[in-house]
Amino acid sequence: MANAATIQLLVLDVDGVLTDGGLYIDDKGKPSKQFNVKDGLGIKLAQRFGIQVAILTGKTSQVVEHRAEELGIELVIQGSKDKGADIVSLAERAGVPLSDTAMVGDDLPDLPAFKVAGYAIAVGDAAEEARHAAAFVTSRPGGRGAVREAVEHLLKAQNKWDAAVAVFNE
Ligand SMILES: [Mg+2]
Image 1 (cartoon, protein in one colour):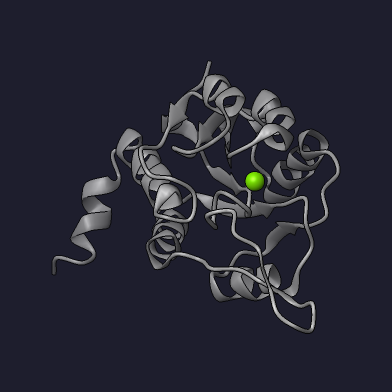
Image 2 (image 1 turned 60 degrees about the vertical axis):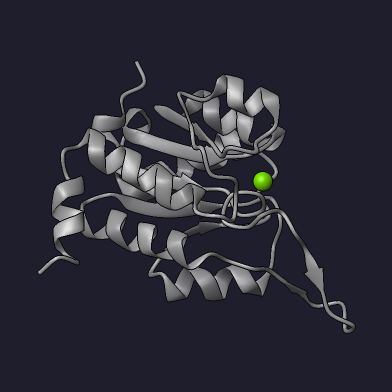
């Protein structure tokens, strides 16, 4: 059974989840992406309160490497052709059972990971199929605080949210 209270690993898709899905290509053909500072804070809070964070994306870019490094995310798989298989390997590397692993996604390639993860979260503007397959759908869209909202949802289910807020209320 899906249970937000036991999640110890949060796996994030990039395009459409950590970004609004926009792909920026400069005149040298180099891709760049826009990330959200609220999501960054959410990721830091998750890590601080006992939830490891991983990235699982079908595309490959240096931008993602830089952002992962900035956020202290060591578990990263780029260029995934099968997110169902790759989330299994991320969970193994994290030492967390799949039942205690959550996946945040927005579209069809995320469905195989939704199937094997203990808890599936869709962003608010995810494809209908992803929203239907999810145990929780954020009200915020991808790239606009959906990841922060997902973290808040998990930490509340784990009775850790008040402690997270208290960090900023000293
Ligand atoms: Mg996506």
